[in-house]
Image (cartoon, rainbow, N blue to C red; front, side, top):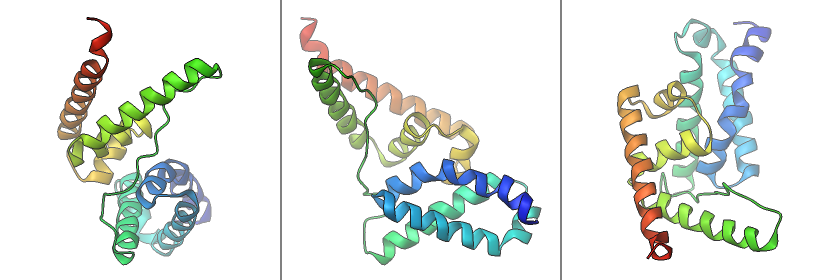
Length: 169
């Protein structure tokens, strides 16, 4: 793999990696440093990557493993990273307060999900990853990812409905 191929096939994925890496490491500065280190490691393996059948999967898996290694070095829990979530916003003061409350409720619900469901819903619905990218990063088959996502969405829907059902009587 030459410089141009690497730029278009591997380096272009760095924007897609950033949400996952920043969430795992907990802040943007560490995530930026990690992305640079990951790209350096991938550049060193560019000949192997060129022959790999799923380049994006290899890149996501490498990034995930690198973050786990960093977190182990810092003696952190592997998936105990803060959920940075702000789905809905508004400029109006009253609406802004309501959206802030709703975001907090959704954040708590997502944090209460089982680990695999939490990872899948965050990667798909918050970070916007495609199913193929999720399967590569989690090493699960696509059917299992779809089932976990469906269960997670259903659980969020049920708990959100229970939280706000008092308004309906």
